[in-house]
Image (cartoon, rainbow, N blue to C red):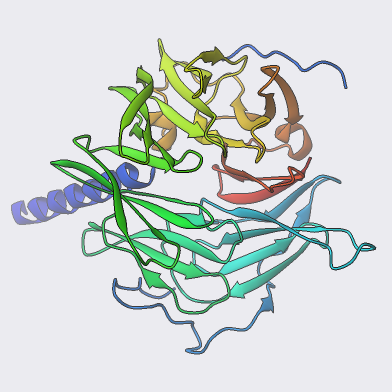
Amino acid sequence: MRRTFIILAIVIVLAGIGVGVYFYFFAGAASVAVAPSGTTSLPTAGQTTTSSTGTTPTTTTSSSNTPTTVSARLVQISKGPVVPGEVVVNIPAPNASSSPEVSVHYIERQSGNVFSYSVRAKKITRTSNRTVPGIQSASWLPDASVAFVRYLSGTDAETINTYALPANGSSGFFLPKNLSDISVSSTNILTLTSGVNGSAASLERTDGTRPSTVFTTPLSALRISFAGKSRYLAFTKPTATLPGNAFLVDSAGRFSRIAGPLSGLVALPSSSGKWVLISYTLNNAMQLELVNTDTSSILPLPVATIADKCAWAADDSAIYCGIPIDPPATAVYPDDWYQGAVTLSDRIWKIDVAGRYAQLVLDFENETENSLDAKALALDAAGTVLVFMNKNDSSLWSYSL
């Protein structure tokens, strides 16, 4: 009997370690000012994945994913679960008489298959049936040709794999094991490795070639992203229990602090890098501010949320966010939200950067009679379509702006 208890205790401890590793690497009420009127094993590192048929898949229409039109502007693309991280692409019209198209590219979590949703035609097409189950996050090239997917493997889920998964079903390639973060632009991949002695960021081409170190730091728990040309954003992994800092890093690897120390700090740069949206907690209440990186000025915003529930417009003019309605006062933000200990009920708001006012875009509950906990927001470059996941069930939605 005692031996049974010992074995059970070991199993519980190992499960707890696995959960902790997952959240560490993959995690990632305000007043409102209204706008003026107007099923196979995981692939192993060093090997490419194979399709379920053993051949290069052909493009097929999906029968398992059928979009549901809720209203003229709101569509449930997939009931999910889908992988956090999607990309929205503008497709030029073939001739002047045709209307341009917008396509949404995403990955099904259970299989790792890649799908494309045509917004105008409201049609879903499977573009790759390569089997990569267990994907936790995806970072796409802007043209939707490749998704850099991340998943855990090993007996105790101790290894983080990053795989370049082509959307057309062809063979991809692995990046180095145990990357702690990754950010993708149209021409480069920014990766981060961390250890007890600090972190090092590397830049390489989107095909995985010509890696070079762009900065090193004694900080060992960071998140990174591009912040315009030849500049990067680095900030300490968010937790309410420790003050965090956000830094801009130039091409020479020099750090310049732009925010902090602040509890629960999360930072989200605009496309040009001129602005950084930051969220943090003060007296356990969420706060949201804008940092102008040219002037170092900090501008308060009239709504509050976690910056990971937001997305920038391509021209830096606006930010779209899931803004919680009466978030539970007893929760610890952002930790409890990342870990799934608290569920938020959101509306989608648009924040105008120039005027710093907020305008209601979507009252999800009013249209669907279901609550929305928004995450993984994305927009097309033209700013015509907003895509988001509902954290409650990992479903995927599009809204025409």
